[in-house]
Amino acid sequence: MAKQLLKLWKNNFVLILICLLFLITRLYKIDSIPSSVYWDEASIGYNAYSVLTTGKDEWRETLPLHFRAFGEFKLPIYIYSVAITESVFGLTSFAVRLPAVIFGLLSLIGLYLVVLKLTSQKLLSLLSSFLFSITPWFFIFSRTGYEATAGLAFFTWAVYFLLRSKETKLNLIISTILFVASAYSYNSFRVLTPLVLGPVLVFYFFKKQFVVVIISVTILLTSVFPLYKLYTQDSGFSRFQTVGSKSGLVINYVKNFSPKYLFVTGDGNPRSQIPETGQLYYLDAIFLLLGVLYILKKKDSKLYYILIFLFLAPIPAAITKENPHALRSILMSPILSTISAFGIYYFSKSNKLLLGIVLGVYLILFVNYFYKFQTNYNDLTKSAWQFEYKEIFEKQKSGCVKDEYAQPYIFALYYNKFDPNYFISTRVLNPVSDWGFSTVASFGNYTFPKICKN
Image (cartoon, rainbow, N blue to C red; front, side):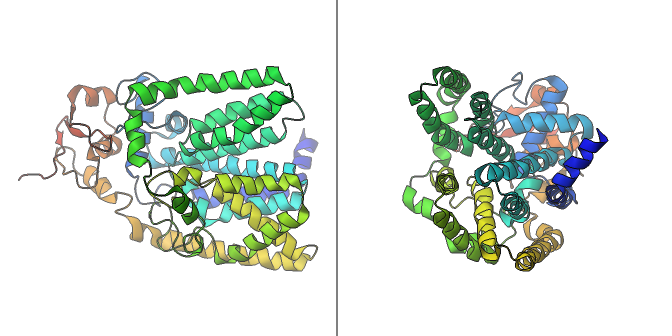
């Protein structure tokens, strides 16, 4: 056993170092930077707490597959993951954000395996994982309570088993299950899953692999039934209409490749990125071009899969109103990291000194980004993370709190850890808004009007 562990350590030493770098930079001050939980994190945390303590969510649904929450119907996997971490760490920001770190780590390892399967080049695989671990695009998402990290992890591993489906058909079934898990983690992967898995199942059907196709399709159809109920009976369709885009899809799509967005300003939402910071480093611009050139020059059909995924990745963002949207197009992050890795490989070839210099520059860029995040991010984004409600509810245990920063009731529940049964028995609801959200007018000794009258 000791020899096996030593062999594992030697064979994967660099990957382990990359994983350690990822874990250290994600876990450091995770409970205090960002400065507070925003409303979705508070909702995820409290609904997980409610399930953990009562077996029901805040609407008294028993172990739901869709959490009604504010009326937007959150997906289950991240919430149940938080319930597990809360069983150890309690209802805390650490517990709410820890699953994002774990899923982020799984995405990093999954990317390594995907690239290794595509290229059989360990160096390329390590470069891809390293760049993915330090890219600004993925940094904040992988240390805060975003459901998308779970979706990305399952999707990445689903692709890995899909690439191995020719070895044994069981891998196709495993891949299908993982694709379903990704679709039940984040909505973007509900769009991407059929686009990826559908053509594969058609291919195996024409290859007369009927048994494995039937099993996979059965799994998919079974997973669709709860979606049917959501969109036909639970007002989920009206929620979709509020986020759906009515502007030109092509224009929205192209915005996700804008150089200004990628390298200069980044996502305008300060919860997604340090303000006025690109999704990628300027240096990536060079190596992305070289990476695409490398893929085209190799004329290896397997590498074209990377470009196909890059083509598909922005689609979920393109069909929604806010655009470009780094979270909804999160699949672009590992793909662009991989293409940059190809560019570095192509640029340095067998020159280890040149490779070392390039990696050293990337590490310096990341250290600078990490320092900026640690020293400036909270000051720049406190209101975006609804820090005001943290200040209010850590001091005020009853009375009137105006609905200035949206959904104050969930922060009262979260920061004061109210018994879910007490909340249900005392709450009064406002009418559902045009956005499909429902708000709480009052519960217990709290009221939440637009304006508090003295």
